[in-house]
Length: 112
Image (cartoon, rainbow, N blue to C red):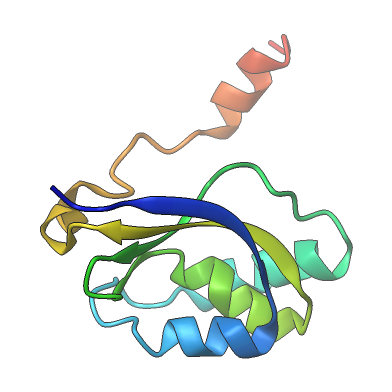
């Protein structure tokens, strides 16, 4: 059984660059998404919400490339939940949930 650990880490742009060096299994980077996240970070709107950066048991980045790239782009430091030690074979099951639509957000806020 894998030994999975998690903790909130302060990620500087330099640390984000190091983590991105082990980004060998992700989809192509969406520059528009990176710009969007970076803008939120620069404005101080980015929040620690429990969504983790995930590293495999072999220290490969499994999830979080856009957030890490945004830290680099924004040149800000962010507190981020980091989960390490996840079995690399589980990659195909990560980040496969339903995307929250604008309609979903409106419904949650009671807006018709």
